Image (cartoon, rainbow, N blue to C red; front, side, top):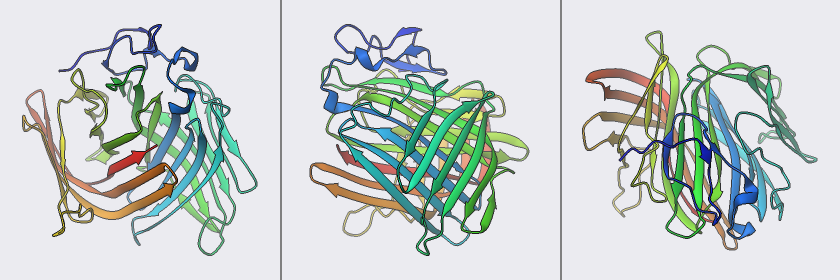
Length: 341
């Protein structure tokens, strides 16, 4: 099932993937000019989640062709609540100039309300944001964070859709060690000890309707760095998965995973009850206990997005090379998102 990618161009002369599969680094060359599908379907984004056991922030800068998005979420896990605000610009069609690689290039978004930037500085990622009147009490939010890679491996997937010239090229970088602060009004929040980030870097041409499942965790357990990326749900993944496990300086590729989300009596998902994560081989056996659901339901004409990004604590084990890695009460998130976009 797991086909490793070879270095080279991402797209052929018809705008299709030269090959589908996975890698542990960004070895395929993405160029927006190689895309042959309608310019209306191109979607590019950089998303960061950075947090610890007390609080977290999520930041997005995206250029989805017919609209661009700048979004900030603040999450408090001690007194569970969240605030998310977004601003959009219409018909940008690549004018944000998102880089063709996650390894270099800077991104910024600015209007009268928000200034946000993702920069590369001295081998680290520098994340800054100032958002006026962000909270319900009209408090400003300011953040200044540096992220440093701690593991040489990430998870990269090149996933085709069944529609011609449609694809998704994605990198997730776990265990980004954080140094910095977030200031909410006059309160300064420490984002140093045991604070980690994940980057979700995505470039592609998507079909109109999709549902995906994604889960990520990064942290320390018993003095060792430990994390994972788990997900499925979109495109043709017969050649690969995006599942990977990190422990200290090592990483292991995983096969399948399934998110067992509890049901309500009416058949809807019950996101705030404990979930189970499992695999056919039994190498993944996790319980996820929710703390907070960052729920969003956007409906703007033909653009619809139903998001449930749930934050909580993972306990259980993952087996690799015959060894069981057990951990308890590590904070991460799991989400189910359905988009018509």
